[in-house]
Length: 116
Image (tube, rainbow, N blue to C red):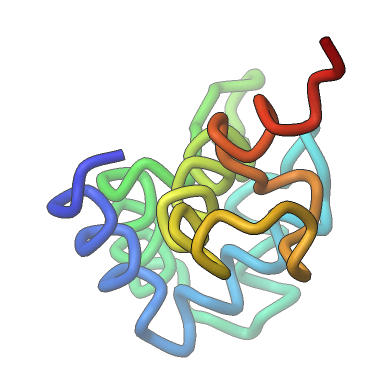
């Protein structure tokens, strides 16, 4: 991930409603949730939610698909993991297992785990 993409993603998450939406969709898993269900659950007006969902999609943190008449939003786990990897890329000067969850380890740190 490039720095500019990380800034866009972090900016999208730096708003309380968007952070709540993203966390809810991460919890929902790959099946995601209908926009109306998200609005109802978080008590966000639909027009406001639409704006926030667009910001999160533009940042690469959500995906959208149509299911009949419903728009289903899901967390983009690849985008989330790329952001986490970017943030932790130089963690602990490259030390292996310095507290970074395995799901966000960088490629460089994974190479250090390989036994030859």
